[in-house]
Image 1 (spheres, rainbow, N blue to C red):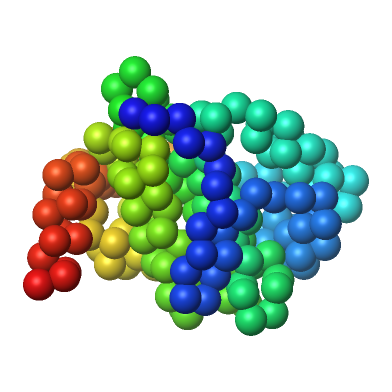
Image 2 (image 1 turned 90 degrees about the vertical axis):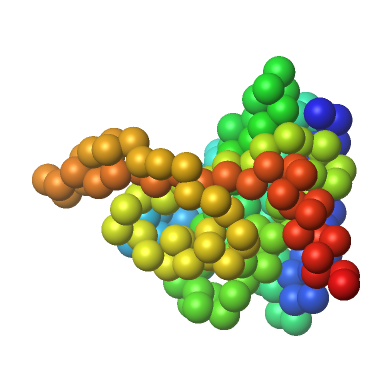
Length: 191
């Protein structure tokens, strides 16, 4: 594994880049204050600029580590920060990382999560030289399941009754891609 750190990644419609303090207004407007969005990936809701800036300061100070990978998802056409994507779990010893992402409700169902995830998967294998990338979703989060399937992950299994939310248990479903599978698929896509 190669420690690459959070580098800019450009896709057809998105720029993935490091967060900066000026992202706070878009974050507050589009996702971190949205209870449904934050609840869907078990994160707290932020209600004030001060709270968001506190979160951003944690992100920004973490960029000093080359093993920290968290990107602001910028819609290139508008310049708005519409979400985030990260390798939130990085295991340098075993050469794997786990992806998390979120897209603001106003920007969902447009393929942005899939586009961002594919770009981060490519970065993980081609730049950070990971052996495995994994991802999971709560069993009732069908939109995330669709993103995961579109990105070519293989289902590995469930941690049963992992989440207890609103008086109900949900499984945590795990998927992964290995580097040889990724590079094999890249080769098949070119033929």
